[in-house]
Length: 238
Image (cartoon, rainbow, N blue to C red; front, side, top):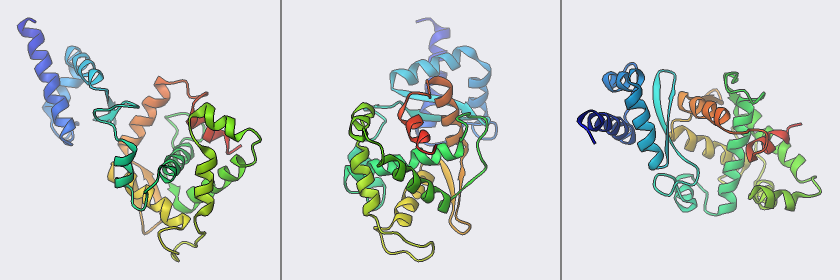
């Protein structure tokens, strides 16, 4: 490896190290590293190459760099057990998959037309809960639900059972950890901790954070979004 390529690799590794340490690289923080990525094609390509070998995606959005583990990453992704420990009151995989379902519903509410450049500004927590309810009502009426579960590698039958087992509650009148409102709020708190959303508890509103918008943009850009699990959940609204 010649001197120039070694320097390029070192610059790319420095950017990745800072990102993995949880620091921001943008037009306003760690500006020199941001400019090296933004205006040096070789550093950009080297960074994506190294990150790809580690099963990480590096995305640019809102003049800021973000990282996201690739699906199924064993190095930087989380196991089901690790995720259960990070979301309050989630102790079983069926409850964890309900969290996934709620997150997918939230994504489709922000991007109703499945276009990443047209997100709505915010989602009401009450509307999210109502949308989850409606989609489960649609889901359980499907004749081939078990086959759909197998085809999507997602046990919709058990997830729907967990949702329906949660107590109904009115906002501001919690019936404990096992009610639908509290469960959805726990998912929102987890997403906020991951810097994906901003959860305004006073106004009961959910706002997409820049990291969320950037990841979703690239998701729709890179994948056929007409035939995956997220699209199936979106279709339940029809």
